[in-house]
Length: 195
Image (cartoon, rainbow, N blue to C red; front, side, top):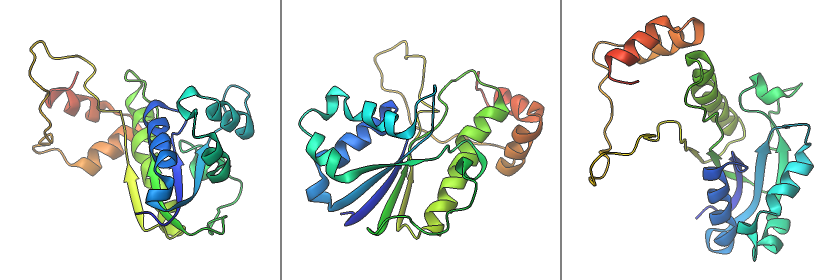
């Protein structure tokens, strides 16, 4: 059970939208008292316009009353330093206690430069985790489609789930390189068998 508020990023995307649907559909069972959606401005649309558009998605048919009762927006861009806010927000801005941060936002373009991918996935996630800690969330979950296998297997076998052995590569050094120029990280990715 959650028994409190949830902060959700990525709700306008496929995975985050599905999580929002599940939270709304099971709100009573889970004890969800508020769902705060961190949403960035995009294509000239304001936060309120984007929340209103999300609300009209057919997947929320039958859940709009719960949506209206529980969902509020919070403008923020996970890819920007300090979420694009002028001042740090050290206190959770709602009365309901924050119990869980579900971070599903990220740039899912698979051909982006290494530096941009690192900012989108790693830096944004670290920043969200820091915010969750600052706002005293009891749980933090990161969900990403960044490493979804984009090429289907040639056989009918299920894809194996396995962690990649980094061999002699240091994860932090790879990340630092990706954030600066990325040449070593690109070489390492090729040597580890990534396209």
